[in-house]
Length: 313
Image (cartoon, rainbow, N blue to C red):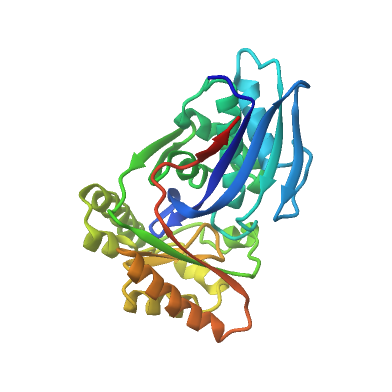
């Protein structure tokens, strides 16, 4: 079936899942952007509208445009039409829940559909990662991979990009708080140690292995035990107000565990049921209500499919 326009849901994601720094991520169901991509008679890429965020309209400066350009440069034969994009940002840039990744993933997915799917979803990851390069300087895939593939993913290799799809804990929900503060990615990187103690590295490796095993075995108890970060969180948590209290109280309220989403400032927690996830949300809300910091709070199931088609014409 040929069509000329596609409307998409481009989901938010959680990356750097505790011990899975730079390699593990997961996709959210109820938080994300909407995008419209349509064919145009004129070749090239045009960003017609952006709402919900102050982002560049020039395709070469916008992650969505950069991602599509990377895909087109890889094609042996470019299409005889162009692309027009409308982006409705509901994921705030700098939130730590994959704002740029959603734009990049949605853009390549939609353009690929309009071209008749020359690439599969795994192959699209490397193009979306080029959009991430435009956003943060590196073609990282721990957000774009779950945005495209859904569920939990593991970046086995960064060069060349190789992604493993992982199962999820059944019925799993995420509660995410986004404090309205800015943490520059450069600062969150600079604060990290360049060397780590071997004993801490061993603990981290063990937790990553246990976390992957827990997902395959649907073992929520082991999953909870494995959500421990001995290397990154102790440093980055200092940049996020009330982080230790949020995590402690969330676990007391029934959460399996949590950590820093992306480079922050968002804090994520996982819960076995919606009821627990909402209780955790209420607990976190009370903590931040005591501060002067505005925030957004989300409760979402794990999205098992990634980018979704809302309509086609």
